[in-house]
Length: 211
Image (cartoon, rainbow, N blue to C red; front, side, top):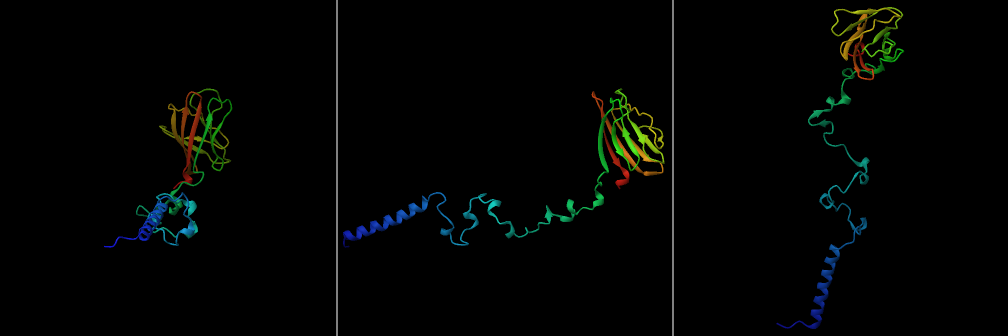
């Protein structure tokens, strides 16, 4: 076997250095040195991108198609969603209201008012902190009937008049006030008297607006 010449050895060394230098350069690329000019179109795959590296800012939303089965949620059809529910299943605006007043105020404070029904719930207008409230009939005709929790009968209030002062024994009271000539039109009140500042808070639910 003939010994390689000096020129051949030099050529091999040059080739090895060239190959080694290319490999070194490929593994030591500066940050952000690869741009779109160095990437062939459609050559990158999902595995080439770091997880969670892309965000909505890099995505052109108009190019996205509809997600498969996007009308389903955990196997439920979109007809079960809130947007597809029948409006009759929801309480209409104004059916449920809340209000408050201070029963120690020396002038009556309106807690809840229903002008179209002629029913107004208010404090009694004295400084006593005795868990009291009054109903006003603001109608021009027709009385209203009030049934309180635990009562044996109804209390009637005539047009333009105030009911007797109600003094419940408990700090939480439920009662119903209805139009005498149309009992289906009524308000269910639930009130709580908060010590020690004399505040009374109430929720009113209109039955004529709720099926």
